[in-house]
Every structure is written in structure tokens, then in C-alpha cells.
Image (cartoon, protein in one colour):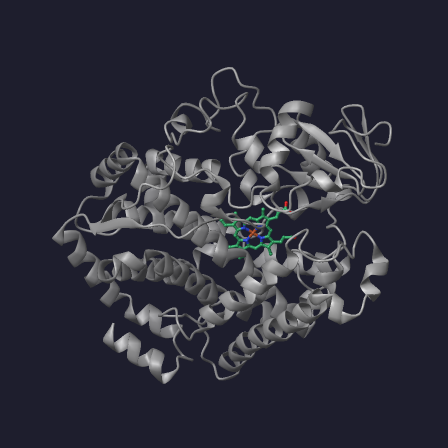
Amino acid sequence: RESGLPPGPPTLPVLGNTHQIPTKFAYLRFAEWCKQYGGIFSLTSQTIIVISCPRLIHDFMDERGGSMVDRPPSRIAEMTTNGVHMALARSGPLWKSLRRTALLLLNREACLQHMPIQQAEATQLMYDLLKQPEDFVEHIERATASIMLSTVFGVRTPRYSDSFASRFSSVQHKWQALLEPGVHLPVDIFSALEYIPERWASWKTISRDVRQQQRKLYYDLMNDCERRIGENRRNGCFLEDVIDQQGMLGLTTDMVAYLGGVCLEGGAGTAAISLQKFVLCISRYPDVQARAQKEIDDFIGFTRLPSIQDIEHLPYAQAVIKEVHRFYPIAPLAVPHFTTVDESIDGYFIPKGSVIFMNVYAVYHSEDSYEQPEVFMPERYLGSEFGTKPGADTTGFRSDFHFGNGRRICPGIHLANNAIIMNIMNLLWGFNFSIADKGSHDSPVPIQPEDFTPGLTIRPKPFKCNIQPRSDKHAELIREAYAHARPTFSMFEQELTPSEQKFVEDW
Ligand code: HEM
């Protein structure tokens, strides 16, 4: 290890720590090293810095945003997307234009304009759960994909199969697998590997396949949106605004299509994972469920459905949502940043070209900060803003580390929060959840790696849950609300296939 770098596990010549970094669930090993080496440690041979101390995250990643704004080079991402994938793009004028557009059109006020369709989709989720509670995972996937498809591209998906949502899910699955570290040849570290012929380098074939499917999907969606604009059939989706301002914002057609696609990628899976993790926790903690339902009943009652404004009056429901994010952070290592200049922090030297990870999981599960971090306990957020224990050092703390940090922080925060809040309030208001399978371990909630699928985001493996409407009255209100949502839905159903149309009529 170069002198001056933060400490870290012992290295081997040439390999450094490469052989010790797991290709799956690396955040768990990183959390162990954090206990051993402190809130900032380093790995080699490619210099990797892992930070798990909120004070250092703030000082280093938020305050010195300019030198931390880049992403590590990714030849695979470059080849698959032409470098226009905003979340993976290197810093520079192209990323800046995309980022400016996203921030401009996804701010808090702009996102409120998308609430009617978000609320309608959340109503369909409840309606779907009334009809087929056992398929809740698929209903959640549909709802969150449809929320993102409608708000971003103006096209909803009333059922999961044979839709844009299933096309998206299929290519997204391949795309995420392609990007998973350690699975393909490390062409970014050893550039000569790029010249290995395709028959020994499967990533090239997969990259071409993903590229072709991804471009076709994002262009199909963009072209439909352009056609609606041209025929004066607007529905207020995000991409209409992007297309209207394309010239002023300096965006090429490729950038527009991919901006929509990246938002879809950023929002659909993450919101689905949040809701599945919520169901996982709430079904296993009946006391938490009862307390949250009592709060909702006292404020909202039994004559109407929740609306987004209600959340301000529901501190316990807010605490439940924060605790779900803390307990099971969606992307435990967020997305890596890359230093553009030499830096120093706390007396350590951080060379230009270091890969920087924030270990969100380690921050949220630190015994220095949290009372019993391995217990699901929303009450912790009633006593303190960040849910931390008395006397804990909260310098640099935030409750939204799961959205990343610095100049790359997730621009979809407001859209994501609205979707998650709306759906969680609805589910607490309308349904009772209880365990249908105990799992293979003693813990009340699954916490072992084998309970999750690995990757950039950590998704629960399929699980069973009993879901029942809380009363006939609740069920009746849900059916009425679903029927009333028809006019909102129809604005986003302009391109439905005949079989989707039939599904809508019959469902
Ligand atoms: C619960 C839901 C979500 C979570 C947990 C989440 C998390 C994240 C994280 C950790 C990052 C990386 C931040 C960093 O580098 O420091 C990110 C980036 C990004 N997210 Fe999200 N996200 C969510 C929803 C969304 C939504 C709804 C959208 C779009 C509307 C979105 C669009 C993006 C984009 C475009 C980036 C790339 C930003 C950049 O590189 O400049 N995300 N998100």
C-alpha cells in the first residue's frame, strides 16, 4: 500500500487486495473492515477508498463535490450506451447537460404535478392486492414500473405481462448482470484485455445484445412521446418537457432517449425493492403494524383513502419508512465516485483516480450510532432526527444516505419519495400483513445474504406473505377509488395494445 493512504487489510504483491474483495455482497466484508480499520480504509491494487463515517462522507464527498464528481471508467458501459448513460457517464459537458435537465425537471414542485397518476397507480396496486394478494411481488413490480413509465414517458402498463414493463425488466436484468463487478474480464484495470477475441470475451456479445434491446426500447418510448406531442395528445410526462426544451438544454436525440431510460432504470426497480422490503418488515413486526395503522386511522379514518399531504401528520408512518431504508438500504454501496485530483483527508493521501465507495449499510448499522442496529425499530426516529442513540456523534449525518451524495446525489429523490410514501400509506391504511413462511433462520426478518439477490441493489428473494383487506369497508373504498381513477389512467393509455385494452375492461 502506498504510504499516506488510509489503512486497510494486508496486501499481496501485484494483486494488492483484489483477491480479498468478494464479488457478491461486498458491503458486508467492507463493514467488517470498517470495524477493524476505521471509518475510512483503503484497498489496492486499483486504489479503492471506502468511507463509512458520516463526518468524513460529508467533508469529503459533499463539501469537495468538484473533485469527487466523476464515475470510474467503464468500457462496458461506454460500449453499450455510447457514454450517454447519465448514472455511469464520466463527468464533463455531456453529463452536466443531462444532470441540469434532470434537476430542472425533477424538482419538488415539478414532481407534485405527477401526483395524480402516481396516486392512481397506487390505487391500482391496492385493487390488484384485493384480487390476487398472493401475487403481491408482481403487483408491486407492475405498479412501480408503471409509475415510472407514466411519469417519465407518458405510457402506463395496466398489467405486467407482454408490456413495456416486461420488456424493460428483461433487458434491465441483463444490463445489471453485465455491470456486476467481477463477472467479466476487468477491462478497465487491464486495458489489453479489451483486445481478446469475442469468442473468449462473452461481455462483448452480451453488451451488443443489451445495447440493441435497450436502444430499441428507449427509442420506441421516446418516439411515442414525440408522436403524442405532434398530435396534441400530451399528458404532462417528464419527457414532453425534455423534448420541448431539448435545444435550449443542448441535448442530442440519443441523450433524450437515454435520459428517459436512465430515469426508468433509476426509479422502477428501486421503488419496487423499497415496497417489498416494507412488506417483509411490516409482516414480521405486528406491533409496528398495529401502531402505524392506529395513527393512520386516527388521522385519516375509514371514509377516504390517504393522500400525499397526510404524511406530514403521520410521524410514526414517516419513522417506519425511514427505518425500512435504514434497515435494508437499497444500494448498500450506493454508486462509486472517482477522484479527479489528488486529495487529502484526516491526514491521509487520496490519489487522483481513486474509486470512492460510501458504505451506506455500515453507516446505517453502526453500533456507535444506533441502539440495536440489527433490530427493526421505527421508534428510534421519534426520539431523534436521524434515529441515532443518545450521545452519538451526528456530525455530517443525514437520513437519506441511501440516495448517495455530493454532486451525483440521486436527482429522482422527490419522485421516488412520493411513490414510496404514497404506496406505504395506502398499504398500511388498507391491508393487514402477516407472515406466511418463517424462513430458514431465527431472526424475525431475513438478514442473511442468501435471503437476497446480489448486485448493485439488494433485492429480497421471493417470499410469501398473507395480505388481507382490513375490512369490507376498506375494500369497497378501494374498488370505488380504482373506478374513479379511470379518467387519469386513460390519458396514459393511448398506446395500449388490443389485448391490454381488453385486460383493462375485464380486470
Ligand atoms: C428509492 C428509490 C431510489 C434510490 C434508493 C436511488 C438511489 C440512487 C443512488 C444511490 C444513486 C447514486 C448517487 C451517487 O452517485 O452518489 C442514484 C443516482 C441516480 N438516480 Fe436514483 N434512486 C432512486 C430513485 C430514482 C428515481 C425515481 C430516479 C428518476 C426519476 C432516479 C434517477 C437517478 C439518476 C439519473 C441517477 C444518476 C445521477 C448522476 O450520476 O448524476 N433515481 N440513485
